[in-house]
Amino acid sequence: MNLISKIKYFFKNFFYLKSFFSPFIRPRLRFYLGKIAIGTPYFYPRRWIDNKEKKGHIKAVSRKIGFDFVGLGWKTKWSDTDYRFEYSPRISFVFFKWQFAIVIEAKEEDHYWESWLFYELSTDKSKSKKERVKEMRKENPQIWIKYKGEQEIAIDYYEKILKKRYINY
Image (cartoon, rainbow, N blue to C red; front, side):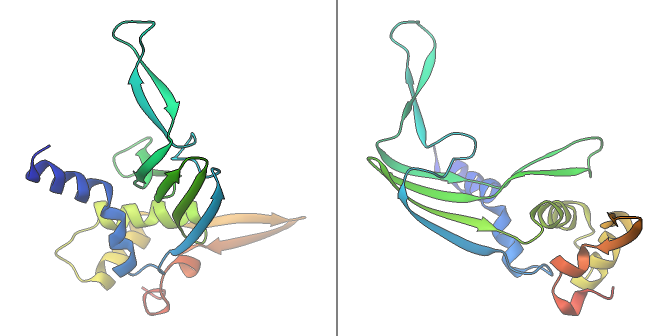
């Protein structure tokens, strides 16, 4: 992998770090140290080797020592701007049966990451942050209805995931 490919890989897989400097409340870091327990993302840390029993096939084996860097897991569903959150970014280091992991988590995780993706990928970057927030709130509302018995309660998740100075836009 040449230097340009490495730089492209870094920005593609670590672009979620921009969320720390966005109008959104900063995600928090959760640290874990103990027996292997944090997936990367769906399985425990593993590596792929050639399968000697079946030529041309590979198989997964548990990672003994090594790092895994997992980017933000997301996809689009019904349109180019219908973002769906799948899993949080994380870094994992495994040493035999022990693991040290850092997971980047946000409150209201689905709403947070789906809204942040919309802000980052689908708003006009020539506008100010406040104008982009206004555009995001109009084009991608996060008002959900919750029922408590017969009572209907509207929740605006932007009030929970945006920094205070960006809420009223």
